[in-house]
Length: 469
Ligand SMILES: Cc1cc2nc3c(=O)[nH]c(=O)nc-3n(C[C@H](O)[C@H](O)[C@H](O)COP(=O)(O)OP(=O)(O)OC[C@H]3O[C@@H](n4cnc5c(N)ncnc54)[C@H](O)[C@@H]3O)c2cc1C
Image (cartoon, rainbow, N blue to C red; front, top):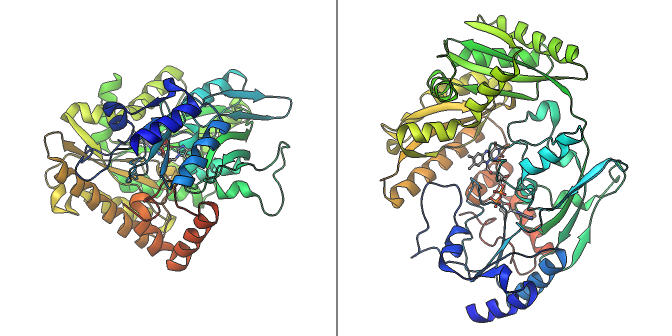
């Protein structure tokens, strides 16, 4: 079978763009989990293939569908829900060659390939005075296709900017049967009524492979920055609740790090030792003055919770250092302890925010396997999202690392259900299928399965992900 798959797909993409090399297969099946592949259990794919456009994707899918071979679309494989692991033997479809970026200021949109990295799109837009309303921590490597499949906005606060789906005007998608579909509009107005785009943004790669993304151009705004230090994380939580209750303008970013995390981050960025835990933000405005006023309003709200210090950051270099401390924090923590990171995504509702922080301060006691591991608390607090982060010793065996990751998803599921929320990042299926079923019920899950069947009658796309890993 492997030879037949190789020969057939080689004819579609050419020899340079297909590989069955052992290391390539392994590299393209790993994701961001701390454990390696278990070659006894996980079946390596037949091939990794790099099509150049939707026509080649279509030919590959027609072949796979006729032969009932699973196909796993892959961006950069940074998924944190297991969805880039390819649980069944099949074809890995690497989108890396479809990385074009075309900005059309006459129409007011840009189009890009799914393999363009989030960062490359943001940089290209920035050069023309626009910005991408998407900002995952992994953006230097994460792709637009991966972002689209999760409908994830990353650090950006949904309440101020919204989700990528709000900006997508249309898509080109190849269905699992090989049919090519165009959705949406080239106008700045989205279609009224049924818009098929919705079936593909946030689809976990289950209903089709996105090969072209069209998004509205968003003019860059002025930004003003602020930082507040508190004695304890609970006061930060109270400040954020106030921000929403007192209608202070929600910023673009609002990040939180507990004292230990802030200290390590600042140390690595060459900043002075912080006096406490930190919350720092970027406020928006049409003018510098407006951005600064918005940032002052936010600082005034935070001051009501008696911080150690609350100040606007006027010096861009200082802000960049603080932001770098946050951006590089996972690497800094791993370096400090010479380990790997692991951690769930806990999202809470506003009334539960402070209680959630208190509970997460004791996250390390939630499972015996976490005992004695370094624990750090950080997150996109403006989006009510936390990542309690554990540093896992490299020399733990893979079985133990697997148990740890599984325990974290169980806790994530339990806490997010209790807080009545959704899972605002990463995606919904893979390791989160149990959460989806419990949160939305079996009727919702059955409906998703039926929808998948309409698009993908032979269940070739991302087989095993909807079922749960
Ligand atoms: C250090 C680190 C920081 C992170 N920070 C964030 C964060 O701040 N916010 C956040 O949400 N996530 C974050 N993530 C998770 C992850 O990076 C994002 O979910 C990212 O969007 C995944 O993109 P990718 O290109 O790596 O996709 P992959 O991992 O390759 O794929 C993810 C899913 O998308 C599907 N897919 C990929 N391309 C297509 C396509 N063209 N058509 C259909 N389906 C497709 C895949 O089949 C898979 O199911 C982080 C991960 C790491 C390791």
